[in-house]
Length: 231
Ligand code: 3PG
Image (cartoon, rainbow, N blue to C red):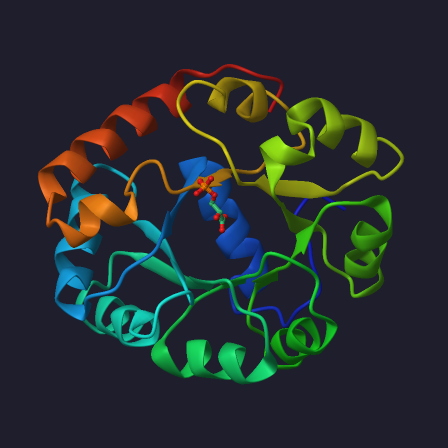
């Protein structure tokens, strides 16, 4: 089994929805984590990500208008792979799905939410921080999980030690990652992609600084592609 071969229905191409999302993450190497307050900023933000070379966004459900922002990006920016983050309940997962989310990310392992996503064939990447939590994910047939909060937990050294007993698991680390420590993560074959808010911080979004976001994304994409590793 290759990393990312999670359970799920196979499409005509033979890959599950999750496998296709994981392949996109692996190719992009980065996942912009977005906190957005104003729906009007959603489409300009998505375009800035696209122009920067990273047509992907995890819209976190941490603000009242996040769902509408996700819906708008899904409807108006077909080239952007949009998902929902900070999804804690089955209801939120259902809302994300109806709004057009192609994947769901969570900070922790919410069993009811994860089971909802698996039942509805919605790619889900719950957060784990310990071997026990990783085993919850493995018991559901998941093989790619979020690793959160990466830096506070001990960074790549902890991730390597914690995951050593388990083969074929891929990680999406996030929490405290930026240009200065990206290489440590992306050079590990265990890391599928790194998530983070540094490319599009909430203050830049609310201030409408989309050129700045585009430039930071471009710089980050170039940095990520230049990182060599055993991948
Ligand atoms: C997440 O939800 O993945 C994190 O909040 C992102 O962490 P960061 O803001 O430190 O990048």
